[in-house]
Amino acid sequence: MMMDTLANALVTLKNCELRGKREAVIMPASKLVAMTLRTLQRYGYIGEFEYIDDGRSGKIKVQLLGRINDAGVIKPRMSIKYAELRSMPDWLRKILPSRDIGLLILSTPQGVMSHKEALERGIGGILLAYVY
Image 1 (tube, rainbow, N blue to C red):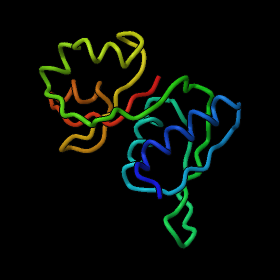
Image 2 (tube, rainbow, N blue to C red):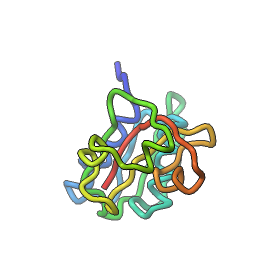
Image 3 (cartoon, rainbow, N blue to C red):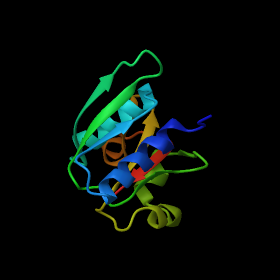
């Protein structure tokens, strides 16, 4: 029984990238995984992806571009305010390798987005994952 579908999806992407594959199949699919993949696609970490209905929980086929060095979930999922996001606290520096490298993925009231978009909109949210 799988407990965290987002963690499974990011580990699958990371492992397929390390092995030099051109595509990855993520299963099971969920709305949170799809929204996270859409954010990664917007920033050029992955190519196109499509949902495949297999009659069970579904699959997502992702085209890989070779740009992911590391990806994972942030556990425990903690909420972060806009002021904390803007000041870049020490624990945040431990997650990302440098100031302008990588993305944090947040779940906000306006949807799943990167920390850069959340800073532009002036909102906080719950930290879900990181990628660089």
